Every structure is written in C-alpha cells, then in structure tokens.
Length: 183
Image (tube, rainbow, N blue to C red):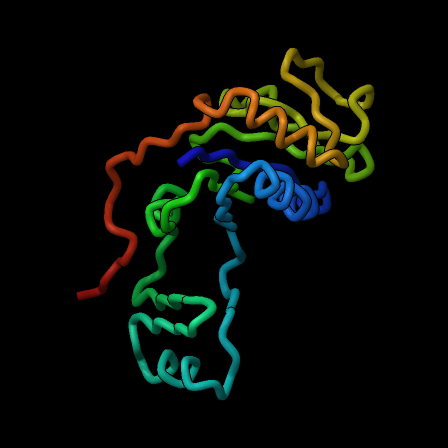
C-alpha cells in the first residue's frame, strides 16, 4: 500500500482535491482508500436507528453490513487519540491510502495552500512535505525547492504520485492497540 497525506488549513481545498484525485487514480487502475481526521464528536450514525440504539446501550463496537457496504462504529470507553498509523491498519487492501488531516503525521504529505485563506505554510518546518499544491505559486510566503502542483488539476497530482510510486510505499510501524479499554 502506498500512503500520501494531504495537509493544510481549513478552506485550503484538501477535500475537494481528494474528491477529484480519487477518480483520477481509479482511472489509472488504482484501488483507493481514504483516512480522514475528524473532530471530537463526529457521528456517522443516526438517532433512533438500530445501530445507534445498540451503541447508546453500551456496545463497544457495532458492525453494520449490507450486500453493498460495511461500517464499524467503535465507542472508546476512555478518551483516545487514535494515530494515523492505527487507522491505516484498519484498512483492507488497497493500492493507495489518501490521508486527509493529520498535519503533524510522520508520513509523506502534499501541503494544500491557497493565498486567499491567509494562513501560514507548513512546508518550511515539516520534512515530510514532498510537494505543495496551490493555486498561486507566486504567492507562496516562503521560497521552496519542492515541486509545485496545481491544486485544481487532480490529473497532474495523480501523475506526480504515479511517477514515483515506490516513494510512498508504507511500512506499518509498531504501535499500541487502537482500542483503549478502561478495564
């Protein structure tokens, strides 16, 4: 599995870029998965549904499956900050895992930056950033020798990734289990 992260501040266009990059990689015959960092109290379940009721009754995990999809909802008994590596370990086999968020992860990343957001850049201090995707290369606040990609050209981003896929080959590190238990 190859892994590439996409980091950048809110509003820079990470989700839009991934939404366009997934079909570009699929068109190249690649199987693509996504790992997304979410805010503390996100929920994919809906009040009143059976799975929600089971979880609210105290189930540690609820696995929901049909003939079209599978979802696992895991309720941590103690607050836990799951690492990107633990989340990657949950994936089934794929060619590429695109990671959105996790801006401080020790993974190769493409920084997504737009001048209009007014946010600072991360690439001068993050050795894991391998390229910058932007709509205004001349507006970058710090000079860089990193490759500059057009944030609005997902085909070019896919071509960049596929030009050296071995660079993104992922090796699972040793890490603690992803299911903290209070006892």
